[in-house]
Image (tube, rainbow, N blue to C red; front, side, top):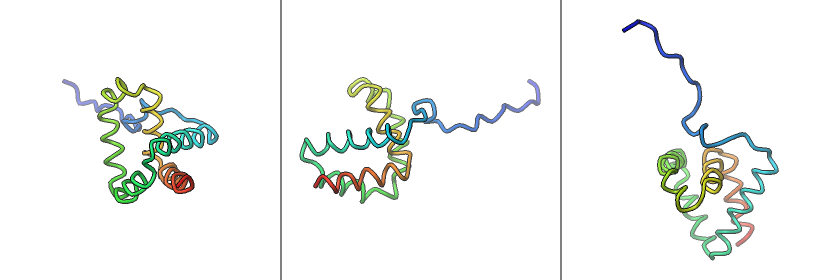
Length: 104
């Protein structure tokens, strides 16, 4: 076995699931997610959950990433990727909460 080290990838594990998207597409994804939550009448509960678990956001995002193959079977790849994009981005997380509060 040689003494060569493996090159560092420099990419987060979630990079394989998320691609760069425009700001308009990101806002549309947040609006769509907020509308789904609103249509089901779960805005207050969702805002409470997101606010209460803000310190655990990174862990929740990683748990979502870990369960992505299973979630993809039920919800489809694009929906899972949308949630991953929002959860891994501080700004997206905050904008989701603000959008949900607007729909209240």
